[in-house]
Image (cartoon, rainbow, N blue to C red; front, side, top):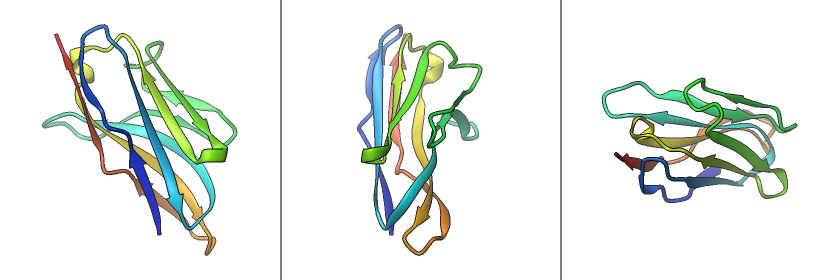
Amino acid sequence: QVQLVESVGGLVQAGGSLRLSCAASGSIFRVNAMGWYRQALGKQRELVATVTSGGSTNYADSVKGRFTISRDNAKNTVYLQMNSLKPEDTAVYYCNGVVTTTRLNQIDYWGQGTQVTVSS
């Protein structure tokens, strides 16, 4: 089994910053792409940012220039640095990892989700 465990989110004022982390552990042969998604109340889950094992990144237009995704391959950990936060960034943030397990199956795993609330 593989687990993705996210750091605790929090409450921050508009314009503030927050850093999320997510560590993958368990029966891992390799962690491929990792990413962050979010789901605001009453809305569908949407992509925030992704990063490949080689470090290539992709961002939603709404967070470009404000959020930075990075990863530490040695620790199977992905980070999301969020700056200049806006109230519309309020959501539950989910970590995602495409993992090749020790049985060489490629499976999509999700974290449990962490609440980020930005007050105006």
